[in-house]
Length: 258
Ligand SMILES: Nc1ncnc2c1ncn2[C@@H]1O[C@H](COP(=O)(O)OP(=O)(O)OP(=O)(O)O)[C@@H](O)[C@H]1O
Ligand SMILES: [Mg+2]
Image (tube, rainbow, N blue to C red):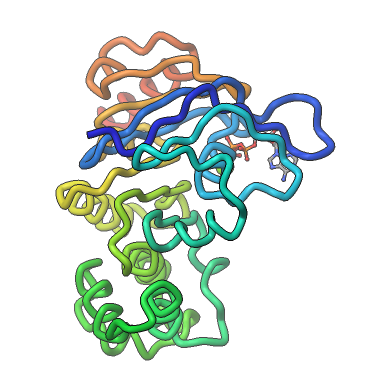
């Protein structure tokens, strides 16, 4: 079942004439991971922000963002905010920026739960989410401040926060870029587990290694437009666009060395 569909999405930032994203269409099913790749400035993060309703005010958006058969573009900022954290989870590249240094991480996740489900036992939902995300001692992590945790743990806390309310769609912007290789693997395994549990995941990366580990399909962007899309094996075998060719050949070279 298609969960998310973009139809001719075009985004123009305030005070800009050139669209950051132009006529972009894609669809994503439950239990599927679509990776968006593309060079810096090609519009990848803008696509995620448009879906999440996180664009700056006065950005011009046209086309449709259909989530669960409903177009999100006419909704108010308030209505969009209600969806975030509840039905749509967002995972950022740099977890330290996202987490508030002054509060214990458990309290922060609990808050995400409480905003949407005030009646729920949010402490136990938080501990379950931490456990699900592969954190062996959830109580300790619950009671930690962000600076007491390693980068990998912080990113898992971030994912626990994004998933505590069991959303059906996850948007992840370069979620493993800031992590070392072995932690990257663990986080990618977690994405595979989320996919196995039926989540639809839109993941932005510039690393074909990440694509190879988790993606079902790949979408390549350049200057705001889609230039290539396909099954991950097909893209690996015969990338068409020069950017994709470069990305794949770097990956193949590194795999041979490794
Ligand atoms: N808040 C903003 N206001 C104006 N222009 C912006 C804003 N954010 C991004 N842009 C511009 O929109 C274009 C797309 O940016 P975006 O951040 O989506 O690219 P990206 O593919 O995510 O790049 P990167 O790989 O570097 O993260 C770029 O030209 C960028 O300069
Ligand atoms: Mg970006």
